[in-house]
Amino acid sequence: MRANSMPSHRLTYDDAVQIWLRHWRGKYQNRIAAFFDVNPGRVNEVLKSRRFLGSEQAARLLR
Image (cartoon, rainbow, N blue to C red):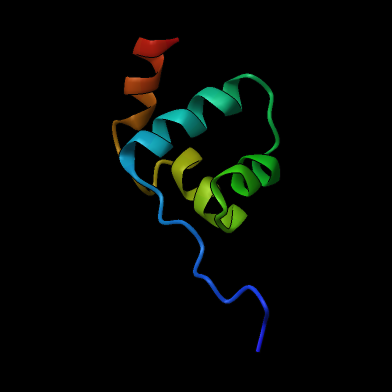
C-alpha cells in the first residue's frame, strides 16, 4: 500500500478559473496540475473546454 493513499483534489469551478489564469501566465499544465494535486489530464479537460464550461469567460473578466 502506498504511504500517501489520500485521493487527489477534486477541481471546482473556481479552480478552473485559476487554471485559465495560470495557463495564460505561461505555466505548464503539469505544474498547474501539481499545484492543484490533480492528474494533468484534469487540467487539460478544463483547457479543452470539456469541463467547467464558462470558466474561460469568467477568467477573462478577472484578467
